[in-house]
Length: 92
Image 1 (cartoon, rainbow, N blue to C red):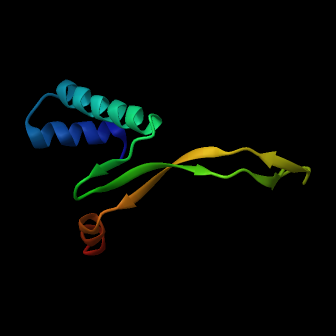
Image 2: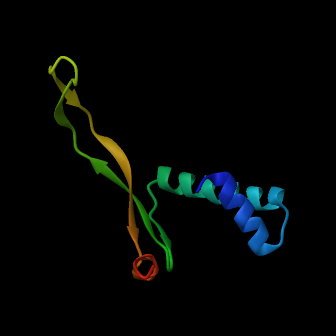
């Protein structure tokens, strides 16, 4: 599902215009990004938890030359699904 599809389905389900649904979804996503970039943990009951974790630097290899390269520390977003979400996914 793409963002456009999510907007259309949300608009239909809540009986609002697609512009209003797009505005709500865009605001939601902006707040999620802002919170994660500030290092906050986002817990959505019945859905899951988003959290920023730091991946340690390591030595990697260049895929073409095979030369070793030092990869620096990076931050990644981790998602852990809730039990309710897992149960809904596994019942289909």
